[in-house]
Image (cartoon, rainbow, N blue to C red; front, top):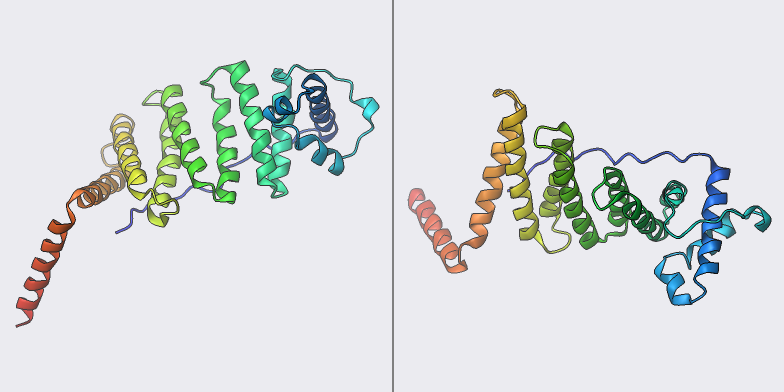
Length: 253
């Protein structure tokens, strides 16, 4: 039996802002990074060794306009770099987009700390590219990080927490049903935990007759049954199947 969860629509992305400003800032940063880190290994560590050349080929600009200087983690880099990554996503260059998104995440965490609401949309955009690439391990890892952020950032009675957990449980249900990465039981346990947490939230925030209670109770029951069945030894399962078969045959006599 499959667990059914209503999947949310595709994650909304930030729309790009002024293109000229974006390209000047983005390419300036690439040049400054290369100048600052002449050692090739350091350049690779900052994930820009393959970005500036590709960007220059698509959007050539005269080098004399690239005079802005930033430190590697200047807060002003976050917006233009995020915009660059979104444009790469739109062009279906998801590998390049992820490299830039990871840099944006570094800049964000340096300037805003490890727990900040702005990281939610960033992680969702990273997950979008990872799903396109079929990198299910990374998808699971980042959904787990999303859960951590939502639970740390929002109180139990905050609607944002339930909204975020709904997205996360939808992923785990999809992973259970499709079993893309061979970790069905791990996803099943996570889904069960999140459904129970969502029930606690519902008890705090919803009227007793809200239809969501029926859905959550059913989802918890189904996931609990599947976890129970998965932990029964194989021999016991075979015995139960034989007993059920014998009863069925006896009823046909």
